[in-house]
Image (cartoon, rainbow, N blue to C red; front, side):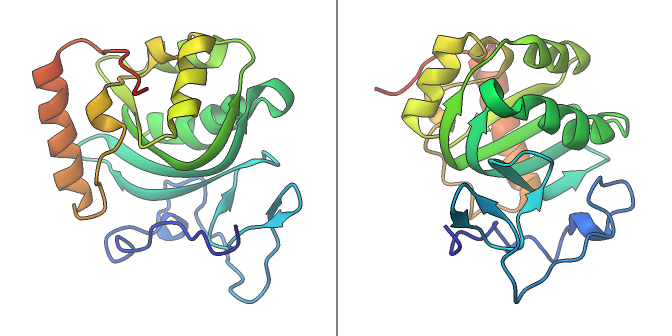
Length: 195
């Protein structure tokens, strides 16, 4: 897992540790020592610890004018033992919501498992977004199924077209605009999980 780096091709556009409005402002990264781990697996030092022992994040991009943020995730999303959604919502999402961000793109191709608890934080997050949304992109099919079984898919804008989306060739604003077009075309959120 130590070879899994957060996506870095947008660093010329946004760096969370240099954004005064980011909860990770001023964070220092050690490129020579691996300080964080998920269970017994060391992870790349560029991932941000948000308080959970199993789920790490990287704020890839935030656009305060358009009101959206792109967050990449790594690890095991465990609400049952660690209440990871609480850490994500309180310590990462809410500081941006206070700045007017109400559209969130969660990139989850490196989320290995999901363990559910209740849906209170998901419901609260969705209710506080107003006309905003949360799009989970490229999560593993078994993780999406767990979202569905847990009943939290209702709080996300999900569709098959977001499950295997080649997002890396796009710049952040292009990705956001492409997703907006998809949302306008699709209308209401769909719960269509790939088999």
